[in-house]
Structures are given as C-alpha cells and as structure tokens.
Image: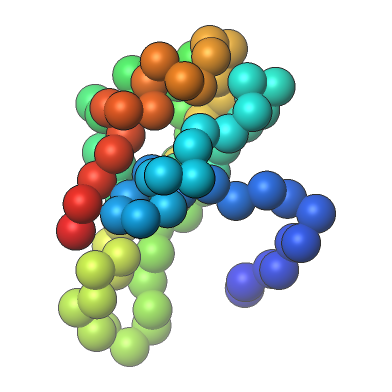
Amino acid sequence: MLHYRPDITTVSPPNSLYGEGPPSDAAEVAVVVGFDEPELDFCDSLVVTRVIDNGLDLDLEEQGDTVWLCRIDVEWNPIWPQLRHIG
C-alpha cells in the first residue's frame, strides 16, 4: 500500500535531485531504497521493512530492492556525497 504524506520532506541523492541537498541534520530517521546493506554503514540502526515487489513479475529498476528503515545520529552533509548515484 502506498501512502502520500505531504507533511514529510522527501530528499533523494540520485540524479538531479542530489542538487537539492541532504536532509536537515535534525532528521534522525530515513527510509532508504536502492542501497545494499554495506553502503549503509552510517546507519546506527538498520531494519528491513520490505522488499519491493510490483506483483507483476516485471523487471523494473526497483523490483526486488530492499526498503530499509535507517536511524542515524550523525550530520547528513558529510555523508551526502557518498550517497550520490547517477543512473
């Protein structure tokens, strides 16, 4: 089920959205998609919430990706560059 939450700020390091910058340093929780666990070593706590399955067996870019709940207790600015992805 997809929920639309206009009250939650969305940031994304891939492609052109990277230029919008990282989340506020007050942000302590992130929902992360498209990264493997070793790339998320900055997370103090990392929990798998689900694996994306479109239910149609279509091989889309996100199909099979893990959705992580990441709790973080560091500033985002220093780690933002390592999250950049062009694809």
